[in-house]
Length: 290
Image (tube, rainbow, N blue to C red; front, top):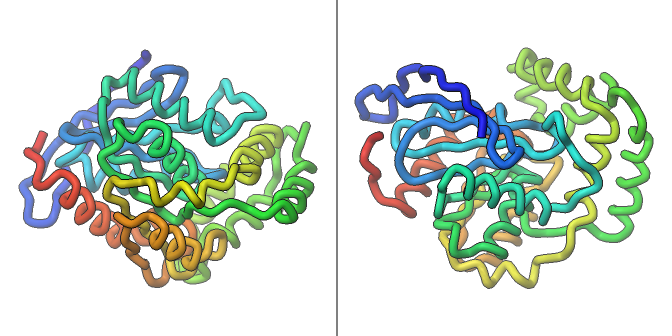
């Protein structure tokens, strides 16, 4: 395990005194991660084309009462591998939990990270206190969609970079119209990152979730508290998919976020953080500040 430690800025929760939490960036079990705070563990798993930095608003908001961890999937690491499946990523997550000595946690996954999180819950229910699906669902793709989208992304195999045109295409899918108009600097930040991604890494990342197995009939077996947080303007995974997933998981409920697209936790961080705080209170009660 390799670590770097730096002070994290003072933050305020609603009606709470300022708390300064230690901030760690490191690597454990071959997985890069950021961590802040003490208390019950909350582990964040990012979406396709994103990385762990997408959860900076959540780390800053929740680190006053919780041990918050956000980690990178294989596609974002220097030692990425392909092909791989969502189950391989779930195994990476559990190895990280073991290395960080986290026995149990609330797992929160955005988009592809939610599909991975569901598989952690199904395989390791004894490690999970709660599940937060952010812009995600429990549904899989049809064979026709799998074939069509695999061919679409196959063009990137062997490419040094996916390029700006594809990055702009992703931005139109990931961010709502209002976000692209009102926060162009944030959108541009991600466009520049995406354009530089290596083609093989993107292809194998996409295939890991595109070719996922159908777990819809297993969703009813999930008996931990669960919440789905979803932007009403999400064009990548429609909110109806989230409604279907919530109905299948008896312990789940839906929090719709008006005006937000697929990257809802970046586009509407205050609303998402409030929803997460309410959910974590349901799971853990009021934890003692670290």
